[in-house]
Length: 163
Picture 1 (cartoon, rainbow, N blue to C red):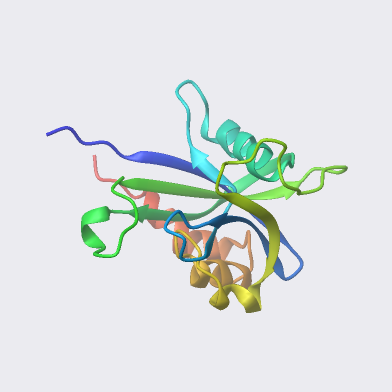
Picture 2: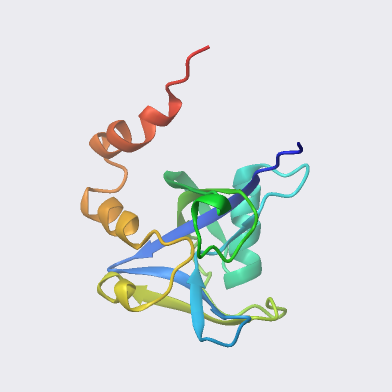
């Protein structure tokens, strides 16, 4: 059996009380959904390079890539309502927008992309976000981004591997 996990590099861009999201028309015509600026890591590309490329491609913005903020795994067979058959691992890095760069629709967007929007944290519960990391974003912000306590509680346990 061939096993493949798609690695997605994601830009978590936070400003004041909002997060930058990419808005898409759902392909089934049911409405819209949102994603972080994100996509698959290409062969020969580092994860950090992929984060920068995806932010540029989807939000026309140049970013500085910071620390790993969140990790999400999508395992299709564990979700009856999954819209994707791909096993995916999303690595979300906190990013800051470089001076002089402003988020906007790209010249050549994905055919289903319809917007680049700042969504306030208190409005996250009113949108569809893939992956559904609304609560994790709020917790990340509330617990003090970049704090040592947050890193020890959420990220360091991921590194404990028995050899």
